[in-house]
Length: 414
Ligand SMILES: [Zn+2]
Image 1 (spheres, rainbow, N blue to C red):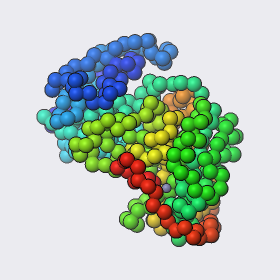
Image 2 (tube, helix red, strand yellow):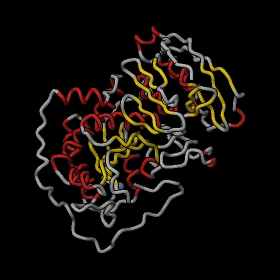
Image 3 (cartoon, protein in one colour):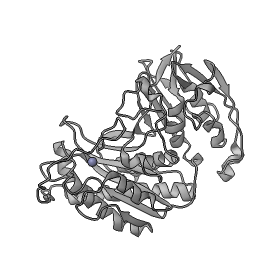
Image 4 (tube, protein in one colour):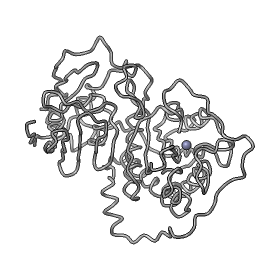
């Protein structure tokens, strides 16, 4: 493969140019499928970004390439647009693009991408065709663009209220470790979040205040009855692979795309499953919170993912679901059982939410994991992890573990 050395000027036009690349409201409309290669000239419309609009240079053409049922853009086209430069590595399969502030690493045949230092899961694998790495149009619009140009995201109003949803509850214990239950830890973190968020000026609503079962639809209904608000669902993970560990975070899968856990190449994902009117905001919220979590903890980076979990699908406000480590893994489960660690987890979530509010209300660039690490390195943190974890177990329920009725979705609930 030719070495790609690109240092073109980024185009600071409004989102109109790029969004013209996204699927129309009706999804992947057959009637609008372009020829195998077509050009799209981004429009230079007045930017919402004040002074930066003066820098607008609408000179990067998008060349859409159709492979099978999908539309793609080349990595060098993307590099030009975002003014990134870089090169393909020795394997010829991975490209690392950077401009100092933004970094993008893409690998052929893989859905894993590193964006600004954290793992992101693309909707579709990167394709290697005619010596070019190709990225799907939906990934460009829904995954790369929001993170490389967060200032272009739609900004509407203020964030006054945070709806905190402690996963599971009552007879639904969620995941279980030697030390305690997911439902108990999730509620504990939700309760820790409340005063921390209130101290930052947020109004806080908890979907559940104590150990009760709450149907998923009711959680979403509580969220939807609020205004100027965001929804944050707290969970802890478990899997049969006892080595699996680390953080992950979810927002709703974009329309017509597979979720991270789905087979991206299965044809039935070229479908019209509903997305969300606020999926860009939800995705940004997941990125700002995740960068803070990964920036404040040495936990394994499992990545920013997409799913159609009921609480994400039914909420009409920006919504995320946090998985704060694995109760099925020994080291993670010890950390999660430690109240100091959970307090620090809550603090990192609040910092991420604040970063989202600053981005939304003041158009500040969201903090990245590397920024937090730099901040942390200058502090001495006293966290007594040697202390034996307190057992938070609630009395055993006579109901046992329930099976949540599956809804019309391919994802299991967390
Ligand atoms: Zn859960």
